[in-house]
Figure 1 (cartoon, rainbow, N blue to C red):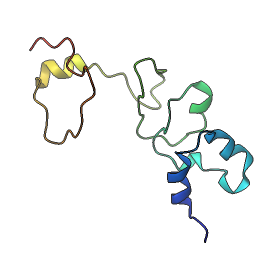
Figure 2: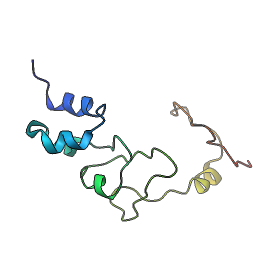
Figure 3: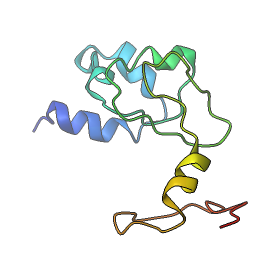
Figure 4: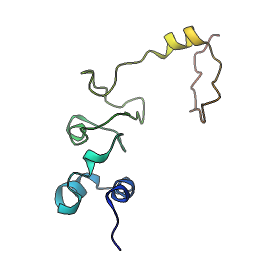
Length: 105
């Protein structure tokens, strides 16, 4: 049994040596082009390997920010909170710790 391209994309997110999978195994070349999100924090080098990112995941507050507008624009959460308040929409499924840190409303 052989796994298809979609299954390779899904299972490759669990590999520790993600980049070597792409570089060294011919069958998996082009694997990273299938991703529409970053499965791990990116730096300047690894970002070039994911050309089709539509959703940029931020994994921690120290992650690198890319200001060239290709992945995302900087978002000011305080302006949104001032505009929409602190009401949590029903679509929200989880909240991280300290998400309302420094709220005065």
